[in-house]
Image (tube, rainbow, N blue to C red):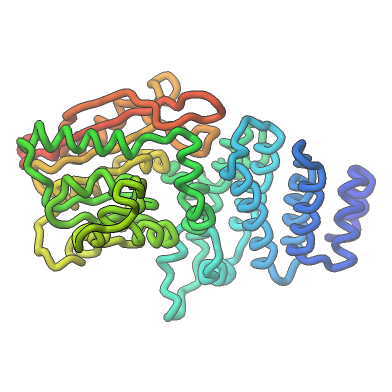
Length: 440
């Protein structure tokens, strides 16, 4: 920081000045600052003090401007965000305005620093295996990459939207977001903070247990809907090929397996969750009652994997070549696709529903859940909620599905989970893909 700026800071905000000058003079690393903030935060016991995170966000942004190793500072911001997100996920999801303000400030810091990165530094950050950048996995690490900051700018927008959704009074985040979106002309596409693979990986081992505590019942609802559609639309004939889109640890696969005669494929962005799903057999794991046969397979069929194939992919990147055609079955497409509690991480559903249609055979079935919004709550058809998920109106869902070539077969209001002691409003949809586009 320049001497004049430091003097002004010290005259106007002495406490921040003291902390900044101390860290600047002692050359404290982002890791040291993060450890100290964490220790101060944890020292207050059950009544958390969120001030250390607010202060840390300011210090890391200031340090970024002065540092020769900007990527180290961004790493500190990412770890700070993960620390609080893990805290929330591990059962501390009650309403807490001060916590949300602190997390908003960190997301603002992340958005700011990403938007300030040079093209060269952006590519370097994308090559870091621990980065939270969405889309970094598409960077070919075996070849030299042309300098570009497009990926960082896109993630900066997503992070700033996180900041605004957490704290609507965060004027700085809102102002920077407006300037970035004006430049790019973009609309909100995806919700990053629960769609980042590393974050899901961090929760993989305790994921099923946490969902149980939330009275999560979407897998059962989707499984029942698939059975009903098979009986009513297919006269009880099993599906040939099914796709569990966003399969996670495999909870839905347990209900789909008896309905599928040939290929059951699971796709998810989290490698660690896929590893858990890979341990499931026709009898054990993925929500099975392990006491059913004392947990001991009785024949070879029981010991077979629950899924025929598990693939680590972003749903937007799915094609027949990288999903069904990785199997030796030579099948033309999926006749069932399910997405259980997955589309809550998408804003507009236009692209993802078109992707599902491109993978499917005429007459195939599509079943998915959403969180529900009214037209008054979401005039554009979807809205980002403070939970970090999207809610969608029925009108938007049906319109986008119709555009993709689907007809609505059934609709049901559901309660997918409890959150903060209250029922979450949800919707369950079943669609049938038209036999041809001439039916539009």
